[in-house]
Length: 212
Image (cartoon, rainbow, N blue to C red):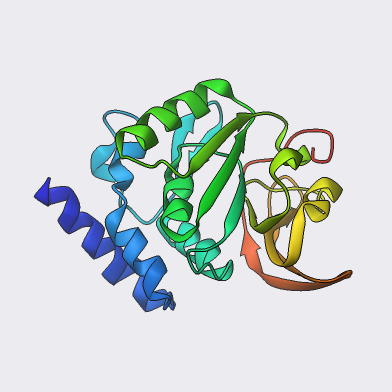
């Protein structure tokens, strides 16, 4: 649909590039993935707006800039095995799948994951693997992961996710209280973890044994 393609191109040109998104792989993925397929019916015209949108069950599809910023921060090259905590709408999983060898995505709400999987399957993604579980536990059966992205705010970094991070791997997670968090990046080098605070953000709560 040309109208949606034009809206997607404007999103990249007006929301992402001026804010400093530079990775050509990220910009290409954001310009390719049809975000309007991942929002509730009747909201397609709002899909490319510069804001998050509600998708039901008190969950959201993140603002396009936030998706691009978090993806760029993971420094993906196309070879990574990536773990996503919080499938949600499936949109972030699609972006990660464009830039990873494999994506393992965990969601606590089966209804949301089933809905996301239907769209992702319809779009032809065959490198995404799905698991309904407590996201704070990760998905240990397929660890270690080169990159881990958590799309919900946590009071602290869950220990199981740190344990599942590969040497050289990057973990990105919002850490703070229920109302505001600091986007935090941890990079593993052997037994050493380097921490970077990247800026304020606000996500829905990460619930579970190692969350809220």
